[in-house]
Length: 639
Image (cartoon, rainbow, N blue to C red; front, side, top):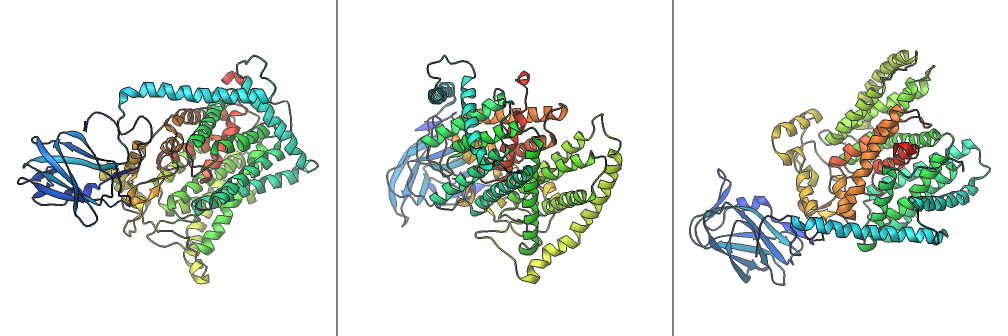
């Protein structure tokens, strides 16, 4: 069989497992089979020249083999010999080779190697040898029809859920009006919040605020331990962990519910896209069993009431401040852990409280949002308080020092953009008289704090764990050095260059693979296996290691189906649009800078990292909490 002009999707359905023979194997000489490095072509010197390609994948049973050939100098027949464990020929497939994708159906049985025999002397470029579990047969002309069918299916599911809501609310006998199902859902949330808030009747506001902070801190701890544990717990423990996280957020909602006449505005593009996304996720979880479960249900049952309760508060900024304070607490606890338990090793990218430097860097830039938000509030005060200012400056300085040690370029970009947004926010027309005086004090204290974390604090980071013998290494942790394009598979050699040199090397290399540290290969693998309803978990990528897609949009489409990208992108767009609007409008909720910083951080981090995996990332949790603050205060006129 011969295909050309199609793409690596099979009717938007799962094409099964894929395995690519490494391109490096093509450059190894065989029996009168040589690779010309000057022309990047393979040349066979005589008739029946051959080369053996080993199947190093742990899986040995495949359905098809794809030979992608270009620049074939002349038409010739090829014999593909399938070898067993003892290098004995099991069977031979013969075919006339053509430019394009040549597809061979394999017989049942384990395949340990293939020998390609070219009957006549010629030259060609062998672009890919790929083994597949299922046949690829999708072409672009099928895309519109497939899209329509899928959207009809999702629409039917939404209508079914809408009918169920109306039935249980006693509205089945009434005509369905536009947006009525939203009011029905809101009534369910109101009833839930009314009953739950009774638990905390009689509690003082001060006690409620403390409990809210503790529940937020517990939620952050759950997400942290889930990431560091790598979701390796047994199924029952996973479900309990998700349930506990949901209970914590529900308790925060119960503590915040003030049952007022204010109604959350779900009727805007951000609200609709948020709801539709999680309905689609529920459908995907129903069709395809997931390793990470109950995400859509978690969002609709735990997070949506949280939005309702937040919106009901007369002073919603108190809710936000409690969240930010709990994030601060988590950071200071992490700093103590780093000083006493996580020694800094020269030449090795610092991993901090995580196993991976990029994940730690993502956590740092998320917490940086907290300190920038509080700094913006401090600068506006008539009389500055030195204790919170010093703590804030110490946090900002230590975050920069930690971020520099992680050598994470993506997080550095997010960090720079956060500061750019913060500085842009500092130029409205109505600045208070004390602002400039506060700014001078702030800069001076920041410089002192920066010196402190760069000299004595860094010395403690390097020496204290060794002196006390308290150094900790996480199970399965592998050190990453600061250079090497294969750092995704953790095989780089030691180096001592800093982040500036590392960035310069990437920009001047002229190679996409080096610039993206191998991420482009991971993206290709994920794009080849997109389907309608998603997959169970991560895919095997570099070095036969399962890893995430290193892109939030790809990860979302991989988990929950290719069309989940539509509401996800719409949600990102409107969260950015509305968070910018909140900077300029006089809303009830203060600290509006937090929303824009959170959205910018989530989008930028998501370009080359996975912050879409549920229950894993602090930035994931903070973004989806922030979404409620972005659209719950919107006026209906804005929709």
